[in-house]
Image (tube, rainbow, N blue to C red; front, side, top):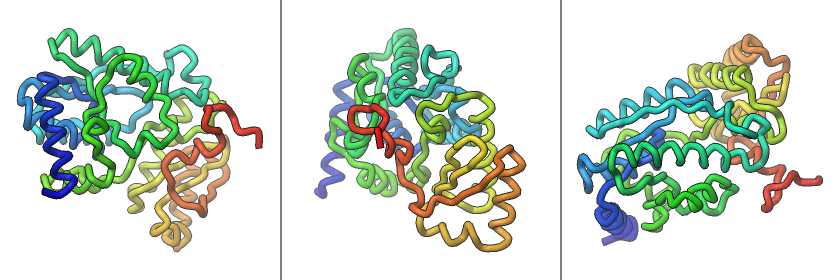
Length: 277
């Protein structure tokens, strides 16, 4: 038995021991894999929960609903107003902590109502090496991370998802829209909508792994290094500039470093304070 398969069996044992679980479900690679195995092991005692919020694009919510339907799992959608959370819109470096603390709190209420023993999220071991203030919120509230407990990495989750023929196995990495706004700059509904429309325009042009980082009047576009050259080819360049100016950006730039997860975290140090340089 190879290493990922061994970890998969360990994950099954962990979920079986949990007995019942409410899985925080975004429809992405990790949460879809966790949910699929939870349904396999626990059947009706596994339930999915997805927050509907200003922070998530409409296509993400549609994708989550479609995957949940395909897995045959009961899917609970609940409303969450992140901009109403105290301190969140100020966009501090621990913004994710404020978000996850509130999110997991609501999920615990749902789990209690549905008589489910645990709440779980889809953190995997690669996440532990990144700046993830939400991890602290999960620990404080006793939220389980079965993928971490089984020692599964992102690459292993993708590999196993592929073997299980999950439609999400090769989805690009995604994160909430607030991650496109530099720390310290106020998050508004208008900025989030601007980012969402801009990124949808780039998807329609054929780009998969992308971010539109919001720097006031300037949009900084990140795409995978393999797609960088496509951004400056005609007519794509003109179409991209026109689309982003239409949603309110005055200047459109391309980040030559390409897409990388957590690029906004590059200006903070390990303690989460703003880098003085």
